[in-house]
Image (cartoon, rainbow, N blue to C red; front, side, top):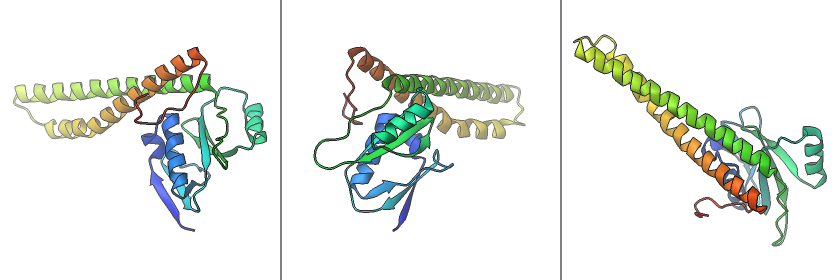
Length: 198
């Protein structure tokens, strides 16, 4: 069986519900996630096999690890690994009855809020760095010295992708945290499909 490598999945599908949807879509196309190793943050490996109905749960819990793991395993869930401090579980099923979602909604909310704030702070730090570099470039030019201008310009340009990524990720995670908070308050949880606008 051929193995396919997908790079930076955990960094692109940063919201747990989007990761679940992505893995389920790939599974329906005949690509099953192999157990995650140490490189799980950067690389997911998939094996080609007959498409099966599989539900994935990306759960970021603060529950007691031993009882949490045993409860999930007793209910027939298979642990495929951990990425971004979230456990990735899967369960195959038949018919129209999807397995019940067991994820810790409060844990998901805290994870999204915490990660979203970290990403947003990182974006502001990088923005401050970029502003500082622009200031130094202008300062050198105003004094007619261009000793470090090229180095500052290179550093500035290389920071822009990081700024954009952290701003994008922070926004997505904080939006998901807000949605989860509302869902927890209502006591109803439905997995949002990406792009549905819900």
